Length: 201
Picture 1: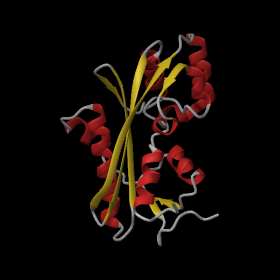
Picture 2: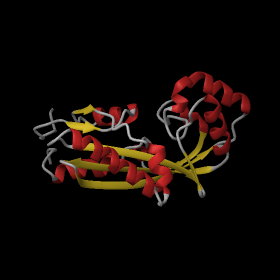
Picture 3: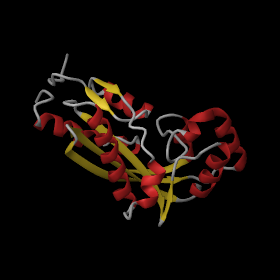
């Protein structure tokens, strides 16, 4: 059953595998075109909270791709991670992933997920949500075995884990929407599409 009513497919301005899979599972036809913006540079110059940075980056991704794709509906998304006032970025390598996961061990951290939808270089919709996750007290030996098992995936997300895969074994408690944790607040996005007549009611 085809639920999408738009005359064009959505453009996802992200290479994130989890966001692609979420949209596919929800029956949203889309193609991927990464924005390739300087995320760390923008983050360093942004005078904003973690959720503000996530929203700025989501908007920037949507607008950059929208400028290249006239008439297309473009979805930008971003996620930031904080423990208290400390903000984390994607680990650059295995050593950085190990250090980051050791910092998160026994701690509750927040994932701030933001989305923005643009067309013709104008933002039509934006939304942000937060989820709170508490890592368990895992051993150093477990961490090494985990890093061996996940390989390069440890550097693919801001937390150094994919909750929908082996990363679930790092946690004691999770508070928040599953899709927010995956980096794409899906229910508000679907509601926006329905309001715009892009999905069946």
